Image 1 (tube, rainbow, N blue to C red):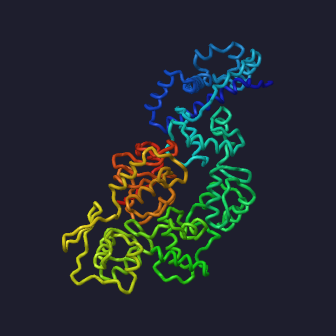
Image 2 (cartoon, helix red, strand yellow):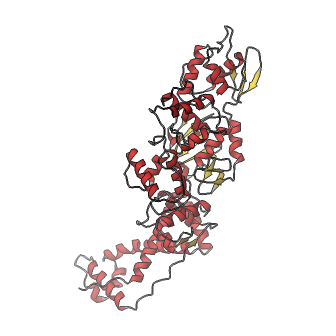
Image 3 (tube, rainbow, N blue to C red):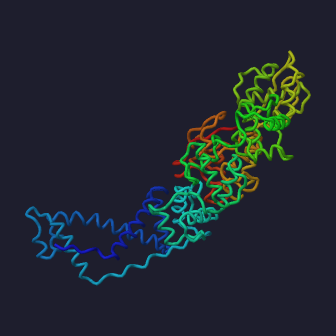
Length: 557
């Protein structure tokens, strides 16, 4: 028998219904279960939301199909059999089962003979900055999957960060770049043809400028222009080759991740080199208190650690290489001198602890982590050597500590006690002095003071932040010299107590999610720099997204 094709209008309706049904089920799964789903559906139907109506119609049609199909297949029931024409009913086999192939063909014949139904006018989509609606949640989530947005809990608000991500998506797919979601953009975004974030020859933008800046710091480029040309492509290829990546001259997910990693292999001055130029930088590091050994012109482990400490305390990416940005800042008047304190964890701390033990100020084992016992030992050393007492190892304390004239602890030495408020006192004379070791109160105050500040990818303060830059800035204000870490870097740090569940978080803990970090407030909320909200916000950290993406917490205080 000749088979007829289903009219295009029916196919269009079917595909559209499936799309709305899929999105509805997706929201049902991710946001609050059956109660929340039907509550939002009722409110949207009440407001006349056309997408809710379409989704409801799709669900009803699917439900009707599920109910009626068994009745059609099993012909033993009188009601469905009586609805068939006599000629068609005779097609039933002896056991009462309808010839489905014949029924399907007959249905197509009737549809083909009928007047063609005009295709329905699709519901127009026009979403832009300022819009609020359920669609935005799915759009943000999809943009994150494709690496156009930093991972964060999706919202219903279409803010500046969402607009910027849409523009990057449009740029990647050679569409009009206006940051607006239309039907065409929406359908492409959720299709299998949607491409992941990538930059290559011919592309321009602020993200390109940032990538070029990092390539310059690693010694692969001389300047950043914001335009991805042949020079940038050659630099990317060389970087990829040196870092054992696929060499294609394009910056995608893996190349970008390695580019900002501490493990990135540079072309700039790094471990193993020996020259007068290295000696000049060592002298500067020594004067600033970062290097504890005499400059010798060899870029050894001590120099690598000194460079990392300098980068950490001066807001640079910590990789231990002397690239253009590190070089320029190191030799400038803006270079910050070394201050090692609570929270630091490196080989320099180990040297400080061993020297304090040698002089009789520290009894415990050298661990490399600067905790309260090390802070107390430093306070004791500073007191006995006539130095300003702050519990930190700055350049003056560092020079005195490793000098031949450093005074040992007296025979009646009593180690000062450091209390939780950040004050140190000596039980020997009852005196006390303030200590700027990590303070929980200052940490929380710093976080609250930046509520509402704008979210900017790569921002480290004081008025613009991304999630990791915000945590870094707040720790610095609290006196904790934790190096700058990306969200992935926070997954595995040492020196802090690990918190393994959201319910165990306390005020001041660092919360680590997949692709995101925040600061716990101890009441089921957090303060974080949110890409989806476009600013620093105070919000819940116990919802479905948080539970799904939570990795761990770190107890710094």
